[in-house]
Image (tube, one colour):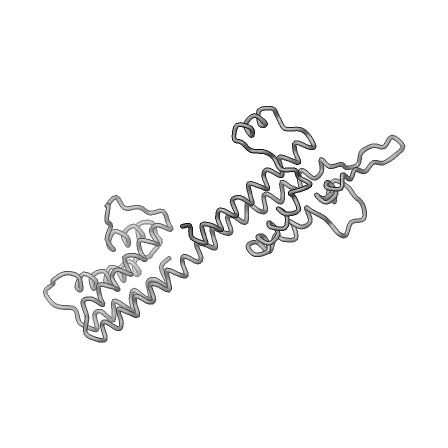
Length: 262
């Protein structure tokens, strides 16, 4: 079963496809489509919609999406449909609502065409480009949501580690904090498109890549290196056992890193 996010992606994709098909429908009405494009559409089983019948419903759906996801472009989107305040009808002020009415203006006794429905082609192109921008914004918002959720999870895991440490489960607490550190550094490397040659890179591999690309400076690198040593003290038999203070230092250090290294 698809998640709600996947369903939203599918709906947005369908809305963009419908917008493109409406554009082709208008283009076919105004200028006629090239034979090659018609053959391609037939091959793909795509039947272009009747613009006058289907545009209003598409416009209403797109309007809601843009209002929610890209409100700073809402006025631009609406203006392509209709401009309420205009002194004359020309190429710039002609809207899709005029196209739907079949509006055509002329001047002089020769009835020279000032503007006709061909002016609407650029308007539907702009509306589709705004909708395309919504897709990028949508992906960006999903990324922001992912970051927030991940941060909440890490905070929860560190709270668990702190409680375990308080109750005397020192190694277990240190191990959890170490996993959070490793996951976060791996995520930061992924954001910056840094990949290790190793199949299972370690904390050391991650912070070394980040330092080499100057994403972290030398003091931060040394600090993370120290946290890695504390993590190893908890995970592997050493000359001494970790103390509560060691693990508390590790937990607080990891908490600092996940809020300052990104």
